[in-house]
Figure 1 (tube, rainbow, N blue to C red):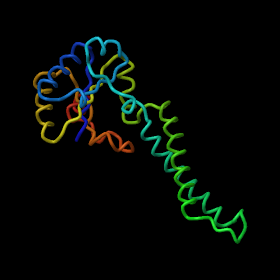
Figure 2 (figure 1 turned 90 degrees about the vertical axis):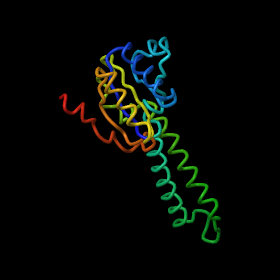
Figure 3 (figure 1 turned 180 degrees about the horizontal axis):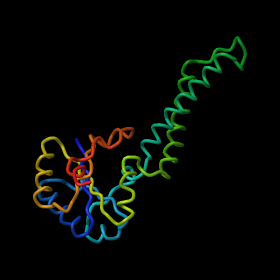
Figure 4 (figure 1 turned 90 degrees about the horizontal axis):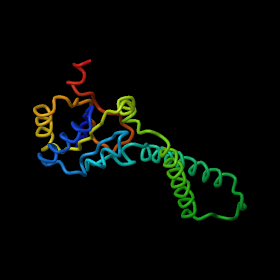
Length: 187
């Protein structure tokens, strides 16, 4: 599955794009619009984005979990080395596993809280456009649907700029894979 990013300048053109994408079989679940005009999107019944797309909750949560896991491993290593309960007292392996698990979950929670306050890194390059009032349309398409969507957008919506293609939204550590050829030739 790929995510194709289109940038439009008006709510009307965004509505038209949304309607035409529905016409070619793209469901609301696979179509999200990011804009500072949330009220306008709601009035026009355009599916807006969610927090997982606009904030770095997932990415920072994974980073926090990794840091928590490392901290947990260091902690149990110190427990094994210093044996604070005495040399004769053996701590069960399950306790060590639970300690690492608790540290990992705590790190994920803290990372997620940090991510709530952070803009999604994949969308950071579009921040100025969105702040200027433009609409960023994210269209998630499968291999069998990509050509249909791109052809329809080229034919019916020359005002919508294809600005990027992302391989998938699941991996939060990758950036947007490539800038669309059409957007690159216009600059």
